[in-house]
Length: 315
Length: 253
Image (cartoon, rainbow over all chains, first blue to last red; front, side):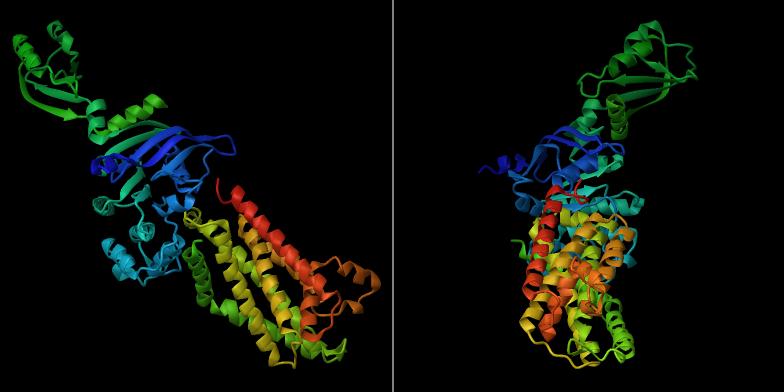
């Protein structure tokens, strides 16, 4: 089989997935999603958007009301043994067996997933996550960051192809967050497909290949991060004026310029995707209008701004 | 069959016993010794024999049954309730493991612990009284069936409970009274006819009577009725667990 076709073939397919809880709350609405082998997909969404429900449904913790989930072509309900053995899950909460040692809890997880003991693999996982010197420590004696690593180690103990990280850096300080990003990137380089939920936009901006935005149980979009920022992002040119300008001259009306309240700055918003920005013409027209400037710079809207706009639009 | 999964749960649960040796082993031995001092020495000195057996020896099967029932239930109910309480149950629910395998792991460990305790009590009792076991295989059958059945019941209780109070309600308010009123420490022949008849509705009477028969060949109900009853109850408990897992009751939303 063609290797590139194999690589772009989805490792996980979610089709028409719906979840309505017993109380009538619809947590997921008609979710369709393909996860590509080896990618990092970040699922963004505000609290209660349905991120954890989606992950829990894929992993078998929550039952879908309708729709299907396939992992490597296997149905997660009918072929649950096959699909679950391919998936590792790191939950949002630091739920650990406090009185167990790190080693014992990893050995338990590996066994639970039907894998024979393999001390070499567990050692490698612990070393990769800088936990090897803690292997005989009781989990309750570890810091929050270390516990989070233990949860990742547990999820990797059975050598999964897909790893779900549910808000892996929630409540984690900046330094640890960056460590976690490095861990995620290292895992991806080893061929693990990673789906993480987060509401830290910078996290998605930093490590994701694709970004999915979920709001009110609906998957609003899934797009490559760079394309998303190009497609939905705005670029702006800021001009610091030499002299105060009372109003934008009529000759410049086509550019839809914004003038700051103090009259010292002009802002020009232009198409991010287009090949023609119109900057050259604007600068020429400014010269013709006798408007001089002392400085200029451009800025691009962040993923956070794009996300906020999307969520606002869909709410 | 996820053999490693069953073994992982079993070993995990047995490891808990190692960590809590005082609570798991030493406490029941001391309690049993106290029973022998109070019932065997103090009361037993006034009741010479019951149906041809010394009073101290007469209460041994009842004591074993009391501990088997209460510890099977508490071991199994805690084993499943605690992961629910702390949230680690997510791992079991997302693992490639079937209901039967989960039950084998948890109930197997809970029953093993209860049976070990039963044998420790028998050994402790042998220091206080002379006893004989007329039918060791029947005794073993009663011990195994009781431990497995009440571990299954405990497992159901652990799934149902959503707080620690509910977890202790059944052992404290149902099982212990039934054991005390089920002829553990007396023969129902000692009761007035009305209470004798009422005792026949107590399921624990059948267990104590059956186990006592395996020791001394004295029974208040036919031993085969006792064995069949506990076997049927085991099947009922097992299928209840299967239904709970299939429906995801209090486990999967």
